[in-house]
Amino acid sequence: MTTNSDIPDALLAALRDARHVCVLTGAGVSAESGVPTFREAQDGLWAKYRAEELATPEAFLADPVLIWRWYRWRREIVADAEPNAGHRAIAALAERVPKLTLITQNVDNLHQRAGSRDVIEFHGNIFEDRCFADGSLQAGDDSTAVPTCTECGSNLRPGVVWFGEAIPEQALHDSCTAAADCDVFLSVGTSSLVYPAAGLADLARQNDATVVEINPNPTQHAASFDFCLAGNSGVILPELVNSLSL
Ligand code: BV8
Figure (cartoon, rainbow, N blue to C red):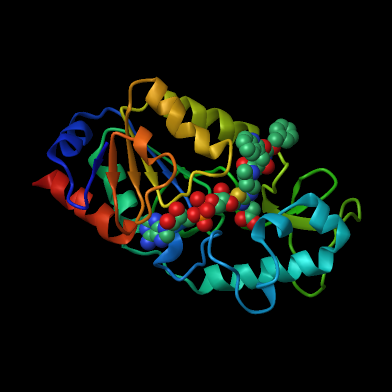
């Protein structure tokens, strides 16, 4: 494992030779856009809750009004946020390598707003509304505390994957296929604590990919990465893309 903020030549060489680059992002890639990460304590009236407690079907069944208030609060934050240099660098990298697969744990739509295409939304999208009964995509309704399904009358829920819920089948399949096929795997802005997302780097490593962690705070898995670039993704990713062209 090599830890430094400059981009090692060996990593640049691996990227230049890569057929397929796979990028997994977490909340850290949106931190420089002002979107709080999951690790950070929630502020204001949400300070007394842990995100992992609220992001569950049980919490929704217990108090759908509270959970909808939380998600509408987060929708406002991410709607007011702008993609940052890290998001834009990933979109630029996709133009510089033969194939790039972008998998995000984020539900904030910022990769798409930065120009990334075919983003695999591993944990869903906060702006979608789905029927709680059958998961079907539905038109939302912000005029009521808890919107209901026009087809069956059940409550609607945000289109995100809650703890204890399965990852969307196509997203899981496409992500595992990409991780197993890539030559370079970049794990960016994630604490690598939530599964099965945190297992994708292992899958890439087991298939001989060069695995890289980009995080100002090296995670508990840092030792198992080939390169750890300790710094903010909004700084390191543009540097990495610029260095590729040198
Ligand atoms: C499931 C959507 C089964 C909702 C989210 C194996 C072992 C242990 C536990 C489990 C296991 N397998 C399953 C589990 C249970 C659970 C789990 O992993 N629990 C954890 C807490 C231990 N997993 C599940 O429940 C999953 N489902 O297993 O279902 C099943 C199977 C079949 C059929 C039925 C059921 C579903 C998990 C998905 C939950 N939904 N989000 C919403 O957003 O409201 S998870 C959510 O939390 C995020 O999406 C993300 O995944 C996670 C937060 O992690 P990060 O994104 O990494 O963010 P975090 O804040 O933790 O860290 C930020 C990092 O950024 C830090 O390291 C920081 O240093 C860094 N950083 C800060 N600033 C910057 C930066 N980096 C770069 N630049 C910066 N500027």
